[in-house]
Length: 395
Image 1: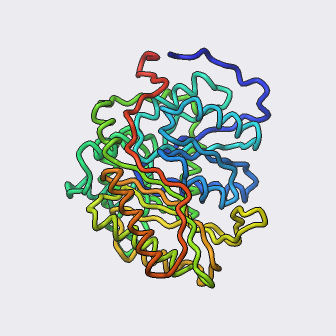
Image 2: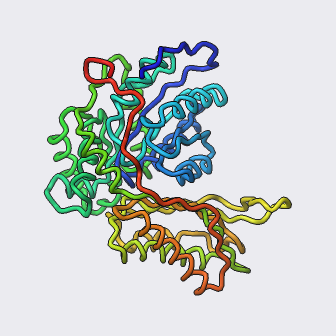
Image 3: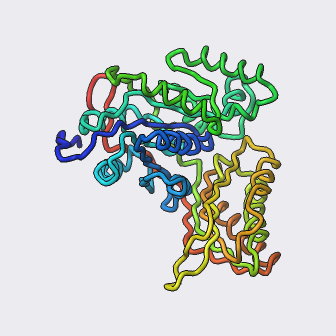
């Protein structure tokens, strides 16, 4: 049922909201955090709303580790968790008084214009949500899709991938640095994308390049917010099937190995990656944060070092993970905490078995104490938006 429009009187500031979508592992969070840090360096107050299927979110930890005010919408997409999303945005606006809020959707979410942007514009117009939707896509996956190369995902999952791009106003063909020695190849993918999605502004991008991030921000700031975005035509049965085929696992793991836990932490991550490969699970995204900790006086965890994020997708080669692990600090101390998120084309019990096996094998190999403090493995449910505005009418 549609709720009545509620005035936003009393809010101390009127932040602009930029909505961001994109398939799993496309680099959304890295880009948002990078741009927020650049803007904060220029005196612009920014904040982030992260969103994922589980309770323990790597993206939230990563954003906060970057010094950015951030809140999370958990246990479902923004559209299905509308009340939580609205509550968190309003609280963020009141508490932090940001000038800009970036709201990032789950990597398997589509139909954002009809179920999130249009309702928010209708009910919370004084928060000035931008009509433009920025969608990130991994250049390697986009190249494969546009040239007919087989990808390891089902047709239902690829339907979501396609619909995300169809809905976008700005398409950021991200991770162009992966083609750093093949600029002509990147340019070819860029041109193919422009031809395939003529409705969108399509730009090559790297979330690790400040100039690219500022160019994205320029596109966002040029938009006046007057244009009415078009809602997507989408088959919810196919959309739901794709969502539910991608199982989710999140867990928090404490690794202790005196006097130094680095080898055990790396061993656990490697065994998780190998287990996913051995289970033939097409990995949408395997990501984790690693934070050195020490026991505080009350027994709680107390961080002693920077939070580090590691990431792996089905498009990455084995040496991508090796490179990330080699870059970890040489000394972490005796204890570290890992928050792990996995989204893959697999059964939930498969993901749980992979995670449990990796913990057991690492415990034995390194004589480590490994404690899993929180674990959830499940299949997301059928997407049921609280609101959906069609092209012409409010449904």
